[in-house]
Length: 301
Image 1 (cartoon, rainbow, N blue to C red):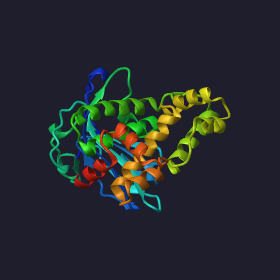
Image 2: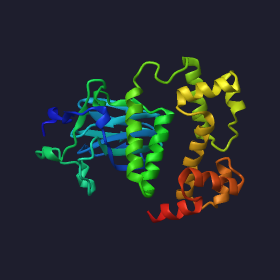
Image 3: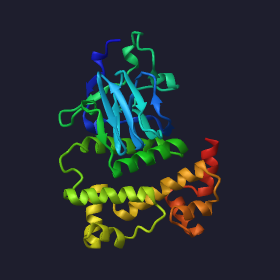
């Protein structure tokens, strides 16, 4: 297989991008090396916990928490979980123009590197004069706003409520824009001291979503006024602190509803909503269905 011709490219203005999502899921993997492969579409893998290493075109890339690796169509690569306790990954398979037809896993992934591939099966990467090709880099920073979009996309793809294809397309466009912007100097706004403090606050929210994360507390930790804290937080994280903690809490609620048998009331209390009725209202407003309906549907799927 001649890898030098991949990824296949064609000119396509950014305004004409129309991505289709073929797969979007979280995965928990133990330490170890996976089989070498190539894909027919494109994949973004975001590391949520742990550490991933990807060998591609003679280079080993190490991807840590809060980073993502971009895997181009047709380029052989081998992934390995290199953190001692395994890793949690969020993977999204997609194309840029909706032309690829995916029916089975074999339409996305191949491990037969010796066979001569059918070029008509591979998705094309768009090139546009005002944007770098995504494959020009392998590792991207996945900031809070970008991860929020990825998490929402997984939820939409998993639950598949009416109109989910449109929502996934919209979210994927946002994700691609955030990844491309992540290399811009100063794209996340604020000075370096505040950026670092805000990232530490977001990490703390992830570790303990059930704690009190009031505007007053965020301002106190940033050592600025509440109004200015909200402005700085939105510049760096892409959303104000109240929306950020709600997003993190709902993501944790979905996980607990899927993976535990705890009562809905216990799940709500665990993430910071001890009032069952208030938790149900917040969850339903954010997810479109009640916590109990979500649990039933997620276990059927």
